[in-house]
Image 1: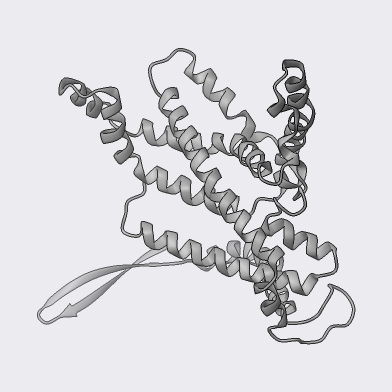
Image 2: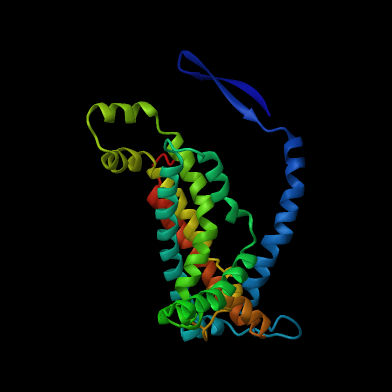
Length: 303
């Protein structure tokens, strides 16, 4: 990248204005990534949106049917249920993850022994595959915990939580949070370490308690990190799939079937164009949520 200086004359004065000119070689290096992104993301997306206006099953002949798929999707109870579950699950998980991760971050940045080793231990779930975690917890919820309930005589533990249509979502929140907390924790630790120590020293001199320091100093100063974690977490949980597949398979019945799982199940079941319309709707919803979050954080210095 080169800099060019341009002399601009305004009345009797001359102003030097520097402009940066991008060298053609940079576009050459950008071209391979642009081609790969177009072929892997843009083209399939456009083809999918196009297919949502047809009766295609993914292969063979097809014909246009206009907005039929979209009208049917808006009136489909199964799809509406998947949206309700996905948004409810995402909201609950965001709250659980951020509360626990923030409290852990406060503890792991305080003056305690072995905090470096503890940080390493707490981030281990982040590097484990979600489907593996789901199968491990599936065994725990389906076998180990009921066996423990039988051995101790506690009846409420003897039935697997995964078998309850009203409580299976709790298990999904627990497992998803267990995997998501480490990433959120690292961001909070970075935020807490960026707070100047002099602020807390001044608060100690003024007689502020630890709780007052937490609520009146720490939280306001790391508010930007809270916003980042909420946005990243909510958008990530909207796409929940692998943990749900390994934990409940969308059951009991369709009680824990997310939007992503509904779409993929439809693809495999021959409802390609119909679920592609559902995917397009979900894409638009995600864009609207992103724009809303962007408008809420605009003008703030997040970090």
